[in-house]
Image (cartoon, rainbow, N blue to C red; front, side, top):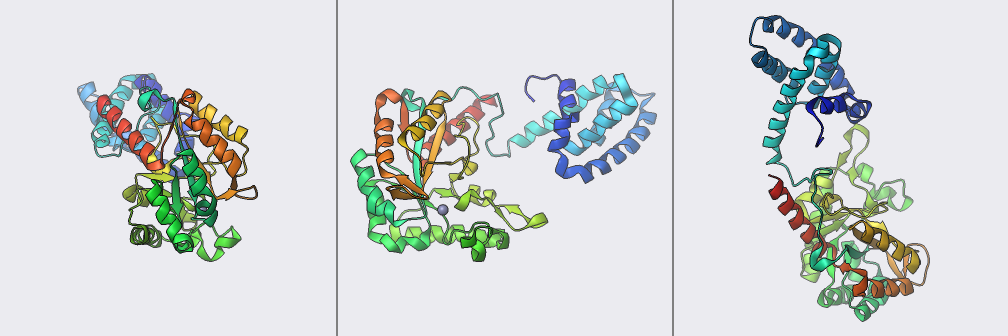
Length: 366
Ligand SMILES: [Zn+2]
């Protein structure tokens, strides 16, 4: 909305795009239009002999109710009833709406505005950040991965499905001792029941309560077994909902309450550090890729100053959901080369930096 005149902004709200954005509230909208027309007609009668500025403001305040639906109602009314005389009214309502929004913003999480973000600077003159992460506590991550990563002096994030930790308990303790990050990936890895492996552990059958228990119990188990408290989370299968149909709920807020970062999967973009919402960070798969394919993704992120979080599963010699050990080693060499300007950090390390920068930028905008 930045940089547009009030009337242009209202045009945006009245546009087809605005209507799409409000699609879910169509019923409310239809009700609001009807109510807005009725109230506007009554208010206009009493406004005819009074101070126009004052009465425009009160009329618009009544119509707006700080609700987008009511703004949309007003658009409709102004175009059909008030015609060209509505310009001053538009300015008044938008100033009221924005004053209300500004007051509310103090209670909201940090949310960089589109386009208003300042240039984002990575530490020490780096041009991008890369995190490597591996999910599910698969045994090859311990058996193959730890030695390889140690040889390349790269620290990664292991998102552990806690019921699998016992298969390599000593290995996971070594991972902690080596300086790798341990994140949460639930206890039992619920995904949509459309995956056969998850039919009896389907997100469609979960509630926010049962999902919260998955998060908290996995944290407790990781802390009990490994002595660390996870600060980051990876959504199993990258899915962020529980329930079905009208009862579907996002469990992103549960993650936001508990973790610094919630990482997705099968996402098609790296993270814009000035804008991204950390509990919904994008995760880029790198299983089954060659080194050149990995490098292409890193170079694209570098050109854009972004943070790419790679997601792998097994580590070995090729196959479904296997990060190729040779390609991974070559990637580590590339990331470690100072000439490439990459900051390699765990998800928590980079996430913490991004959080601090977003907070600082938000403070400067206020
Ligand atoms: Zn997983």
